[in-house]
Image 1 (tube, rainbow over the protein chains, first blue to last red):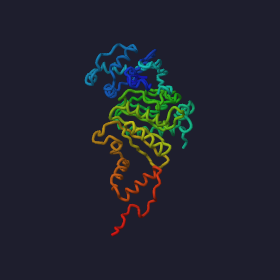
Image 2 (image 1 turned 90 degrees about the horizontal axis):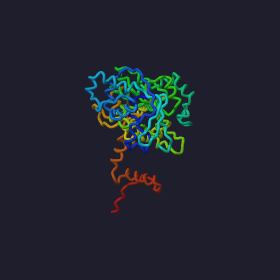
Image 3 (image 1 turned 45 degrees about the vertical axis):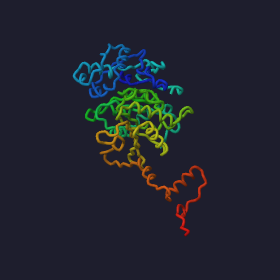
Image 4 (image 1 turned 45 degrees about the horizontal axis):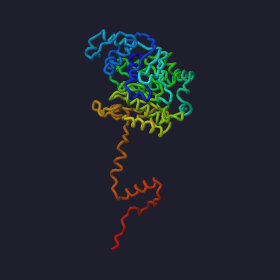
Length: 127
Length: 280
């Protein structure tokens, strides 16, 4: 599970839909794996506009990465900055969460992650 | 044609053997590939995008998404959802590039608003029409799915869902649920009235006009070869607006209405709605 996906996932429990605490999900006991992928600049630029930078900073800190700059880079800044592209690509695409749990900040529901697959199946009373 | 969705739920039907059979069958692989290419054509993505694969199974369609060359607008990054753990297991062994989620689409789509550029679904959503427990109904599952999907797509985004409806009723139920969720919905049928008929539900989010084309399916297929557009949206309106009050047509319509309500209505004859002869 890429860090990119973690930036988009929210708690699936019905009661959490309307609360702000359900996003982002907090990784717990995470085991990370690093892949080697080619940089896809088009996609990175495309996705950057949609990334929630505060949530990404939180996730990055919780996963033990050095803290990110306070402001998200703009498109122009990013296009000119080779190192920034590389760093973001490494964090968003190449870092994968293989094992652990994703915890909702609101209801505390734990979604297990095994072999990189998060289990979002819910018992019927929570749907 | 066998319909496994009539007998079992998706996670039970696709056990280890079924999942392997499904993925290794070259016939299924071919059909899936051609349907994925067709869906991509309908999505018409300009550049590398983030795509949701609904009911990704073993990643047969996802593989195509990540293998597109930059000239074809790829390679896309995708996130797949599926309810069958065995299918996902096969996907892991095949080492697909997208992220996988074990999730039931009938329980909603657990992504925040505006996440995806597009969504694709190959032979999956007909499974929503079968609810196997008393707690859920097909209508409820469909509405949760389409509401979740609508929210998770960005404005101007599109979703293409290929599915196998059992009958017209199911077709109506699925499109109805999509329209209710707010989508602009249309159906595209390839090879109609043959054994290989394939039905694609094309869903659009927001954006009435995109680049001079209308935002719904008629805009999507504009410029495509061999597509006949049958627009049934205005048919009902123009019919009822022209009936003049007091005319024979109007009387017959009213009688039909009353009959439907269970009232006793006199039979319609050639004298119905006729003027009486002037007595003097």
